[in-house]
Length: 382
Image (cartoon, rainbow, N blue to C red; front, top):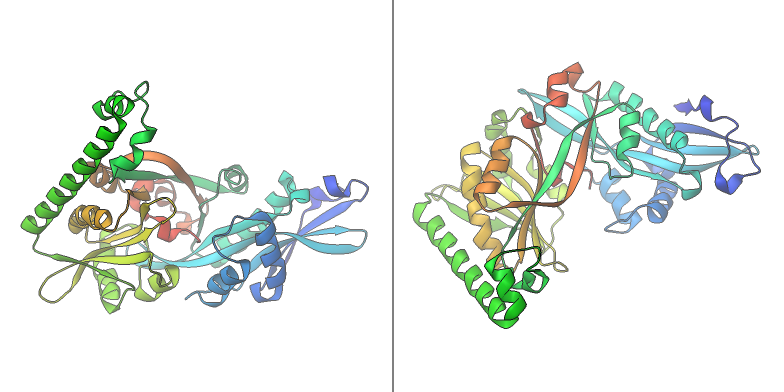
């Protein structure tokens, strides 16, 4: 399938100033354009892994591997070359009591010489039109440069996934405190007696973590365990708790094992009944050795048990050496209230979440009401 961009005919680009260029956006099977995709990713995106490893993970190993990717061709002097691509990742969602298939617009990349608005808009519209016809809804987490582009292509902004963080080791941040902008006692102490402030912060963090752990042990009729990967109990929890959510991505064990490959830096933290080990809630915790932060990539379970698990994550992350605990979320206000109650505060690093305006069978209330969704990092494309 090919989408011509008639309003781009006879346009020129900076690098082809003497040539007349036409563009076509075409649907291709990912395996047929693997080399082009890997080159585009390598030259235009900041990847956490190699292009070949990403391609293997996304288009060969995924439980629901996409069979279509859109490429942008520039045609000049009778020759066509691939200068852009927009991929899809497939997700299963539970929406108001039924399973739907969703497509994520992902890995939008256009070569620098062709980064004018209209070629990219042609590419994104082609993906949107195709995906809207084949899936129940289409969404994405565009970066700041692509937000406006996706909106012009017909996506609505559902909201912004905001980042929340809780400092676990204040000593690490003492030297960054400025008494002129931060009026706290610790900031004033740090400016005059930095060593005393560092020692005080270390003691404070240790005492607070110990008290949190004591409260958790005394009040809980459950136990918390960490696992390197999810097992069948995650499937049981997904089936049992999903009806408490209006719009939530599937959290099957197979999906989670693919989404978060086994790594020493990743833990699946489960809140479970002590007798039979039945799961009540879980979190995916990833540790970043470079920054010292621990990131909550996913949080799911029975609503009444999410707070107990968050309470347990604080001493767990502290004992693991994390300097802070961070989470990015868009959805129900009660989850944000839960984070605030446990000492999390807003930080920089939010991401826009957009949804195709034709999504969810035209149910505009769901497509516009972020409070009915449950979105974490796990729901992004990578």
